[in-house]
Picture 1 (cartoon, one colour):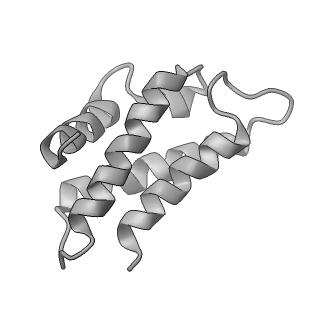
Picture 2 (cartoon, one colour; picture 1 turned 180 degrees about the vertical axis):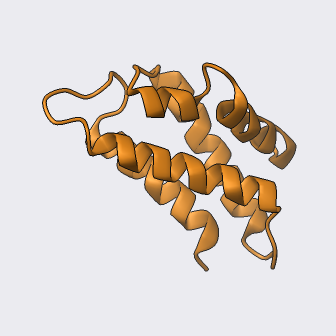
Length: 103
């Protein structure tokens, strides 16, 4: 996956009616392959921006928003979790997003 594909995937998952942002908010099930692709995109973005000083505002907003949405939803998962979003997977997503912004 290259940076253009990674940005397109993040944009799609943020804006689509059935994108990850919506699925996180609705505490809906998510396919494991979809999460793997999302994590690949996060890693690609991290690698691309490692030596850069700035990240596009739109991308930053989308990533932070998805992080906050997932984090807020996790607080409601007392008795059961959506398929594909076990604790380890959620923390991989959080770590993937955080790693983009840490140097």
